[in-house]
Amino acid sequence: MNKPQTSIFGSVYFVLMAIFLYLPILILILFSFNDSTVLAFPLKGFTLDWYRQLGNARELLISARNSVWVGVLSSILAVALGSLAAIAMTKHHMPARNLFLSLASVPLVMPSIVLGVAMLVFFRKVLGLDLNMWLISAAHVLISIPSTILIVMARLADFSANLEEAAMDLGANYWMTLIKVTLPISFPALVAAFLTAFTTSFDEYAMTTLITGTDTTLPVYLYSLLRFPRRLPVAVAMGSIIMIVSALLVVLAEWLRRWGTARTPKEERV
Image (cartoon, rainbow, N blue to C red; front, side, top):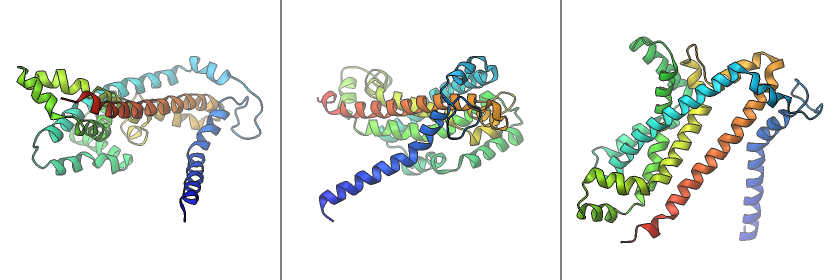
C-alpha cells in the first residue's frame, strides 16, 4: 500500500471513529431542544423550555452544587498529593520507584464499580462511618491521583535540573527552590491535572452511587430521573450542558499541557 492510499485510509478511519464517538452526544443535545417529552424522531418542534425549567429544579441544582464542591475539593487534594509523588519519583532517587508508580496507576485500570464496593466496605464496615460528601470526595481523590501523577511527571521529565541548581547556588534552600522555580514552571501541568481530576470527579457515577448517603451528586441524581419520563427532557438538558463543559475542560487541560511542554526549551536555557 502506497503512502497516498494509507493517508486516505487513515482519514476515513478517523472520520468514522469520530462519528461513532460523538454522534450519540450530538443526538442527545438535539433532543434537549425538542418540544416533546418523548425522546424520539421525528422532532416535534424547537423549544428552550427544558433549559428554562432547570432554574426551578431545586434538587437538580443542589446535586450540581454537590458535584462542583466534591470536584473542587478532591481535585485540590489530588493535585497536591499527586504533585508531591511526581516530584519524589522524578527529582529524587525514590526507592522502588517503578513499583510505587505501578501501584499508584491501579485505579486507572480497575473498574469503578469494584473500587466503589471496596470503598463502601472500608468506610462502613472497617471505619464505621456514615456515608456523606466528605467520603465521596476522599474516594474521588483515589481515582484522580494516577492521572495527576502522570501529567505532572511528564512536565517534570522535561524540566532542566540546572535551574534548580542555579537557584540553590544563589542561596535558595530546597523548599524555596520548589516554590519559586519548580512549581511556577510546572504551573500549566498543575492546572491541566486539576482540570482533568475535576472532570473525572464530576462525571463519576459507578463508584459514587455505592457510597452516596442522603446527599447525592449530579450523575447519580440524573440517573434517578430516568424513572420519571416526564422529567427526562430536563435531565437531557442538564446532561447536554455537562457534556459540553466537560469537553471544553478536557480540551483546555490538553492545551495547557502542550503549552507548558512547548515552553520548556526556551525557558530552560542556562
